[in-house]
Image 1 (cartoon, rainbow, N blue to C red):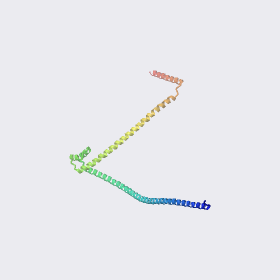
Image 2 (image 1 turned 30 degrees about the horizontal axis):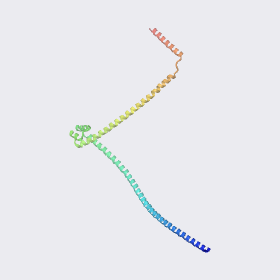
Image 3 (image 1 turned 180 degrees about the vertical axis):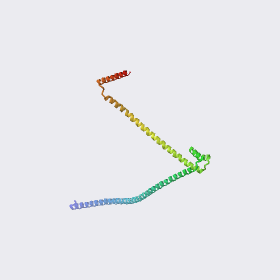
Length: 239
């Protein structure tokens, strides 16, 4: 049989071995966890590095976009300013061209007015107003091409002006006729709406007037009879 001391030593040895095994197992598990954490930290560091690089790239792109946007805004403002200048120049040029056209028209009118009104010019004007071409007018008259061109330009402008004036007069007449018709229709509607009211008022007045009494009717008849008798006596005396 083992003594108490031997059992105690065996128990202590077994406990020590068990503790050593626990320490070894915990060390192994800690090492594995440490390696896993290190790998996770490395992955996180790599991801952070990639994200930082992406952020730097996005920041650079954003700065480039801001610079491009500022350049675009400057270009747009410059173009808008140039557009205003171009529009102003176009309006000024348009006014100058209209003045030149007016001067040319006045000069052509003066030339035509200063030119003697011959039978050929009158005939050419009449033919132009009939709608003939320049070649047909040249064949029928003895005018040169320059005179015909000037005469065509002046006559066409006068015809166009007459057409515009006639169209404006027709439109004004139509508007006046429409306004008169509308006014007449309104007056008719007012009269038609007022007639039943007047008839109703007269009917109401006829109903509200008091009827004459019997004495008044009798006295009125007597006066009428007396008047008729007196008139008859006067007529007989005169006879």
